[in-house]
Image 1 (cartoon, rainbow, N blue to C red):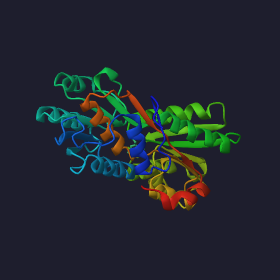
Image 2: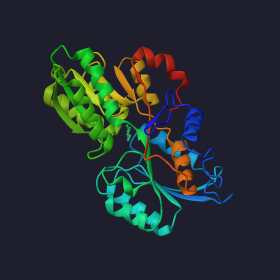
Image 3: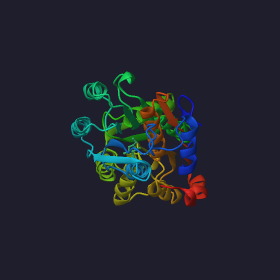
Image 4: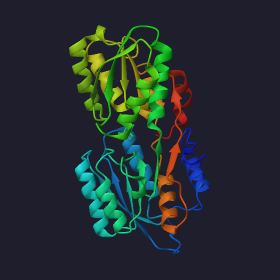
Length: 330
Ligand code: AHR
């Protein structure tokens, strides 16, 4: 349930999420003239990061469904192909178009002060979804997303419990440099493995993509050899799936010769977990659309909203994944 921060998403049932969104604010209908004006359409510019991962596809779909014409929205969608400058330009374009509200999934944390100030000066409210920014929170109305640091701590705690007593060489596949999830998932994991025998021997960005994860893992395998790496910590499933390809191509067995921990719990990741190629996954729920739409509607209606809404994540071993796989929505 939403607190100033907490919201249960669990198995990510869209209906449940919509209900918690309604519970958190006075708006029960996203859109539908939720700005208090009856049937007026709400024009929203949404600046998405790009299409780097399975998680991102599910997030985009959730946002498009929630901000649909049926729900009273006119959505102007932009995907910036993971280019921070292009994303800021897209937001500026939304401001120039005079949209009613702007939603941003910020690629990186830094660099947002000026354009957020421009939106504020133009009287256009901004709601952040998924990732956070380092700019002052006076410059946006609200944020809804996941606790990335906690995801890192959960992943690191499992690693510490399972490998912490044995000398373990770990390599890390980082998410996009400068992004909130890459920063926080690294910090949370490092915190959890402190004092254990897990040693981070290398860490490089794979940009949250399958291809990036594969390439970086190929480099690690060349440098350290199959026997020199015991554990991979991937900041998302797509990079873990790329690493699996690299490990198999090197003649080793992922999940056995080299253990893998990742984050997201998208369908392909969960299937690899059930197959034993990944050993542990921490969920990152992408179904944020209804919540974001509810927040936008409330902000435009002048209702009070919290500054932060956290959606809670689960985590899965292979056995746990097998039990829930049929009910997963992404
Ligand atoms: O910001 C969320 C992260 O972005 C997801 O974990 C990753 O898959 C995506 O690209």
